Length: 419
Ligand SMILES: *Cc1c(COP(=O)(O)O)cnc(C)c1O
Image (cartoon, rainbow, N blue to C red; front, side, top):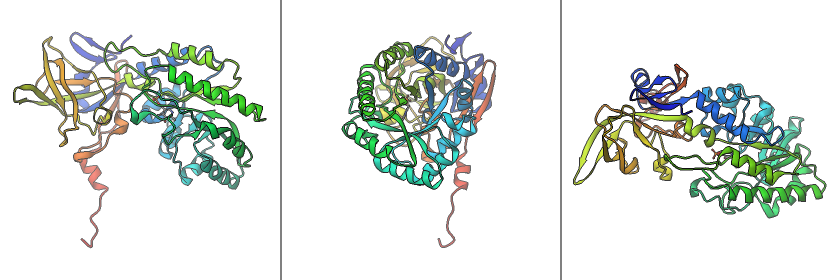
């Protein structure tokens, strides 16, 4: 079931026609489908059905909206957080502290304290230095905190270089060849309860093979640690499963992923955790935008200038990413165009020479697959406001993040009286 479908020639999200949302909430605006989020979580869980009691911690950085997190919490998801701010959001959305995993290479002292005081379920330690600092703070609080050691398996995830995290030269985790020694050192720390290992090699992975290689290396480490006398009860396999951004692309399904995991981890005898982000949220949202105008460009295709820009959806400018672009009310006619935003940077380009539905000033369109790494990466560049977000549930919808106006942003600034 696709919850982003045309009915009587008008694109709907579930039972809501997008023109109604544009009219009431304005554009640009992100629109998420609750039914799609739920379907994706259930498909992911179903894919892991061969495993005993897997822990699914949604990677909050993919979409930290409180209402989205609440939908996922209601489906039994925990959270993978990478900052104190994300931890605050996960807790506010109703996710139990015990179901929260705290990842991240630069957790500050204040964030470690925040995690300990909240009683979160697991710290994924990314360096020996972080482990000692965490232990010291934990002892001061009179507790031992549950921890996993994140290892860097030196595997090429074969994804965009900016979202690859498991190569030796990346900043994440501890090198595999030092992992056992660091684990042993940290296991001697009175503030830490070392209980397992973690790995996350990157995002938008189109191939299961690098994941399988990384998990295999993690399994060898688990065996080494056990041989060294360490009880290992948990392993966190991270996120990274990719999604199709272009119609017709095929990616490994959660079922194929789950079957691979079950095969590779057979006999590990640990509780497995997963940190999916994109695979849950990306195709559960669109960015709804309106054409400002179409501009001729010499002999080339026209520029279709939309009211969304790189500050609202950064992926095309940042990673050269593709988002399908469709009219909300297509006429059946087609055109070739460059699709750009209004920002004063050539990087503010969503697509060049794209075959799209014919459209002109005032027409509505969507960038698809915008539910992950969309609104959360927004900025106010060019003194544009922060984009609004809407959640649809059947024939109901609600604004779940207000548009933040350029005025409100300016209100937080001060001109000192000595100027
Ligand atoms: C970003 C991230 C994830 C989620 O990645 P996806 O590709 O969105 O599934 C999971 N774990 C960690 C540690 C991350 O940094």
